[in-house]
Amino acid sequence: MKKKVLLMGASGSGKTSMRSIIFSNNPASLTARLGATIDVEQNHVRFLGDLILNLWDCGGQDAFMDNYLTTQRATIFQKVGVMIYVFDVESREMNKDLEYYRDCLEGLRQFSPEAAVFLLVHKIDLVRQSKRETFDKKRQELIENSAGTAIEVFGTSIYDESLYKAWSNIVHTLIPNANVLAKHLSTFAQACSATEVVLFERTTFLVIATSSSTFSGTQSGLLVDTDDGSQGSMEPTRYERTSELIKSFKHSCARVRGEFHSLEMELWDFTAVLDEMTRNTYVLVVVHDPTIETAAVKLNIRMARKKFE
Ligand code: GTP
Image 1 (cartoon, rainbow, N blue to C red):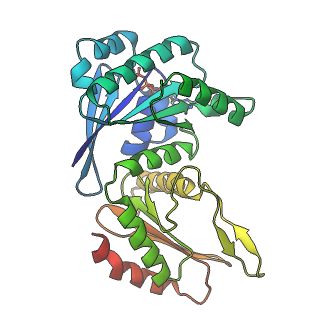
Image 2: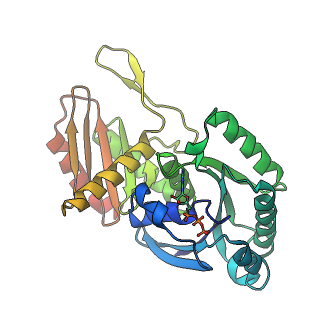
């Protein structure tokens, strides 16, 4: 199954940077060397066995944009599964950006009315005053310019986990059996007496499903029992932070010519095991029960593999 993903937005807004971090495992520090994209760069990314993402990174210079909206209109906007439109939070030409955005929405309505639309208010790290306030203001502006089209807006930066949060949510909408996966994960979590189980895609390390079925960008922290009998809450950004940390760890491993296979952590109040689940996925099992051995968790993962293939 192939899903076409359009990546659009003004030149320099950061499209190729995010693509190279998420899909080519490059570190953020290397993105400054990227040149402007000429016309459209197409990539096929195998994502979870049968699902292939057909990524169209559309160079954002005016001449290219004008082309997409006229001569290449049908080619660009047909059969689109998702359009991701990137706005530079510090753009000095917001009016022009919005005009192109509205035109692209129109093209999408004409050729792919079913496509999902995600908007990224990008480079949010550059905002000096309140990031929340700036984001809310931008979000409102984008809603007003979307003429009733259902959109989802994320504030993102290549320098923190927000990029993974946005992309995990986007990809999540493309996985046909995400709910079934989440159900299997809950059963698996119960079998392991785990607090939580998270499934990551192997190369991108984007979150595919979690055992707490409420996986979404706005979920709140989960409550866990701590040793003193009280309840502590888990960080709501824990999934995307794990993605980001593991990706940079993998990068460090590659630098010393090592290969990342699995990870085990035993701390005073919890145990975490990150291991290969299937050919395309990794699973993270978090247990807050000191009587459960890491080896038992690993054995459970091995036994559950077939179910998830
Ligand atoms: P075109 O290919 O011309 O359409 O541009 P693009 O949207 O692909 O932009 P590109 O990814 O080449 O990024 C332009 C610059 O923005 C690079 O120097 C990146 O390092 C920088 N950049 C990308 N994302 C971020 C971010 O989140 N924060 C900051 N501060 N800079 C970023």
